[in-house]
Length: 144
Image 1 (tube, rainbow, N blue to C red):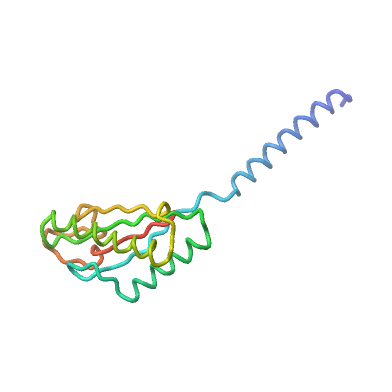
Image 2 (cartoon, rainbow, N blue to C red):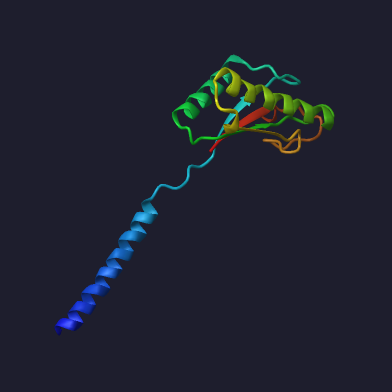
């Protein structure tokens, strides 16, 4: 092989190696974190937080304190017992209870806590109307 051909070959191999290294590095780069859901459950018709659920909120607040990039979406849900209007209001109050605990008790900046509620329209477990389901009486804290 002549020198110019060898030089072109080396340049091509180098470019291929560089592309391969970039592809491997890109594939191994950390991806954006997946959302993690932390459930906080409620008794039927209630917005009272139980001790175990307060511990969940405390753990979420501690994670948010360690990582200022984390943002929480607090999503209120309920089962289908009661009227749609009642359940809509109940899920709002549940979301407010959890959000207020994060912001007021644990001093998480309010701009890092988004609050939403769905009434009975997005159950965790699909059920028939007027069915009491503990898994649906929940506020999901979604951390991203």
